[in-house]
Amino acid sequence: MSPGNLNGEILEIRSLSAAYENVLALNNVTLSLRRGEILGLIGPNGSGKTTLIRVLSGILKPKEGKVLINNLDITSYSPPQRARVLAVVPQARHLGGAFSVEQTVLLGRTAYLGFLGRPSKKDLEKTAWAMEQTSVDHLAKRKLAEISGGEQQRVLLARALAQDTPVLLLDEPTNHLDLRYQVSLLSLLKSLVKQQNLTVLMALHDLNQVAGNADRVALLVEGRLHSVGFPEEVLIPEFIQEAYQTQVEIILHPRTGVQYILPRT
Image (tube, rainbow, N blue to C red; front, side):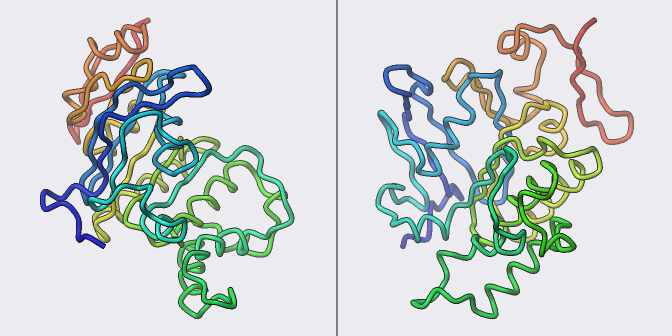
């Protein structure tokens, strides 16, 4: 396969539109993601964030436009090939089933299994590493249905990390997590991006988490790409008020200089 775009772009979205039956959910979205960056995807409910992730992951077929990974149309990838370049962390919704945590995380290695479907030493090592990184290793033998929503969310992240892909798509990854694990997860992602030159697209509702952790921000409004740029370019009162119909104030953290968004009361 191609080594990728010389400009460092690994995932390109070109004039993408998507619909559910006859209802347009994405309208002519063009966006690119670079190697070694976190792109925060924001927008009010119904703006198209989850739809975009569903299209990129192959769950939903686009109405128009295309998605390229390493300069190749995503439709040219077989399911195993796609699973080796792109991993998805969906929102945990009280997952059931009889799989243990360890078995669930090991599913991330499916695309690498040999002819007999037996995990290799490397598969088991990647699984153990992913569980350790997400602090679910102590839950390895527990059934997925027996653990909390926050623990399930971390298991889904571990499964994606075990996949060992250059691109990670996360849909509200801090949902269900308490403050400790929110900080831990976002810190882990930033570390992995830096160490492994990963590319992360992360849909979040918390604008302050985006401001403190994303390299760039893309704002969706009613299925259209409203704006994209550095956090200080997109997370401004005018854009936020227009998108969320809420007035806000921006303050800077006295030590880090990171901006914080506060609703006006």
